[in-house]
Length: 375
Image (cartoon, rainbow, N blue to C red; front, side, top):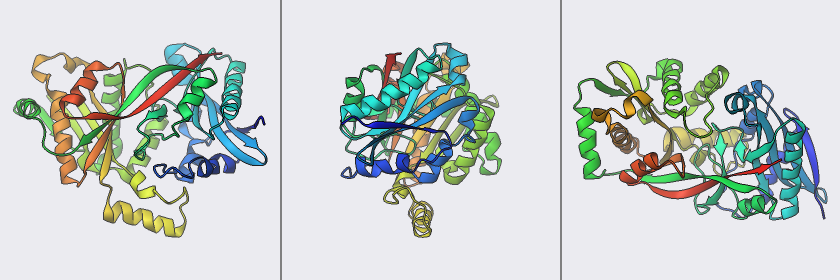
């Protein structure tokens, strides 16, 4: 039976959109349902993303039950930068049924085409700075903070309905502990340079510190595939989010001659804390969440930003700067009681970055895939 596809405007009722994951992932012990209020915020017209974007919420229904979901969205910041007429789909989760996936993605494609888009790419939830890709390897572990999780059949279903692989993204597992001798030497060489000073973020000046991190990040990653800079309102929203979960010890700003030259930011894996809450912040769940974060504390973390200003990358004396930062973040993780961390994501064809992570002992443990099709 063909599924009925329903369209809901951004900001509309999304009860079915939220709850369908309970059925889709009912026997998946590694799925962690996001908090409902967080998804509602992201799909609200008041969210900073929708200052420069438009979108639609799609759900698939059969026999009175919701059996799948996704979004379609157009990001004008992306279009202004690339002028490629690419629209996006995201937040896709379906039962194992090709007709359901086809109904959702065909409807998304039609919606994008009606608005002048020539290609559809995804999943991105909602843009390149959010959750990216469909999980295609690494289903045996839970997702980290701000990363997606899918059933093993989801990627093949997306391909079956006419989308092709565009790029794969890697998530690396790094066990905190002793670093390789060569990495130690590279760290010590950078640390000995008098003009290089490293410090953690100052929480009392968090807004200014995050602005510094994003400024260096924008310079470092401006030539990376798919890059879109944060807008001013997105930056302020990021600051508000980080106030709730940031640990200063897991941040780093490296100055060279008093200029911010490199940055790193890791987040405690709050997915450990929201596991089993089923997306709901009832008074009991809120007490659990606070205890898990403030008392027990996460044992894992995700490195989401590490960047070096372009002007320093090819300076021979600073060749070991990224290794210096990896080593410092490793030591910070040890002090914070972190057992292991995820470094994500990196592009499969970004050889310099991938080689550097391997050098430090990282191993690819998850792979995400972006798909695309012509409209």
